[in-house]
Image (cartoon, rainbow, N blue to C red; front, side, top):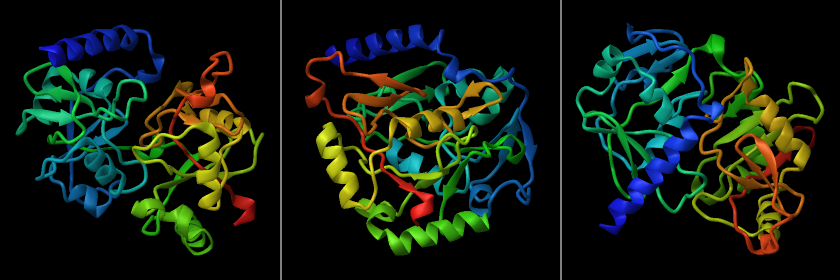
Length: 304
């Protein structure tokens, strides 16, 4: 009973935030249009999931044959190519009924990329085929999922995923260089390096590589700096956090899903974090020195 009350409270609070949070804005939904398995905009591994559909600027994959927990599903989607990810809860909720009927066929529940705040101890919002959604508290719960991919004409040119199997030659070359010169940064904790090249649209800071070095762990600020140094990187400067926010803004809309599992993370300035597309000062909290957040380390491209 207590868990159900907690779920209800979280959902009600989330709905209040949902109505005013412009970070989730999307254009008016359209009807799902099937696309062929040989469509050049998608990778072979993406099309291998089955029937694909296009709605607005998003291409939706087929449903994976296995159910997974949210972390597994998110990592699988990210492995399918540049920009592939879990769809957000809002993207499910914005579907027209006829599109929704097509996309939810064959399963009862689907993972979304949306979590409540930065609470990694829990899991995330699940879209229900019967209608609505709920917040799943257990990180080990397993559900079906689809992946989505932005049409290349609408992808963010200021953010490039660096992978050894990337179709982008520059991305492959840079990924190989990092793997060779910074192996711990590239393959921290056996995660096989989901890294991003960030180019500041306003060129206020030099290009840099952003990683995700915390997984499900949280660090106080002092330990975050130690963690990044161990891996051959640095905690991002405030200016780099601001550049990241600018890079994630496309056509005037902030896209929090341009980078998988973005969350809240420390900057190099004590008591300052990157949160929801902005730099947040925690200095007014007397206990900020004991607060723990995620760690994302950076590398300056000029030093590689």
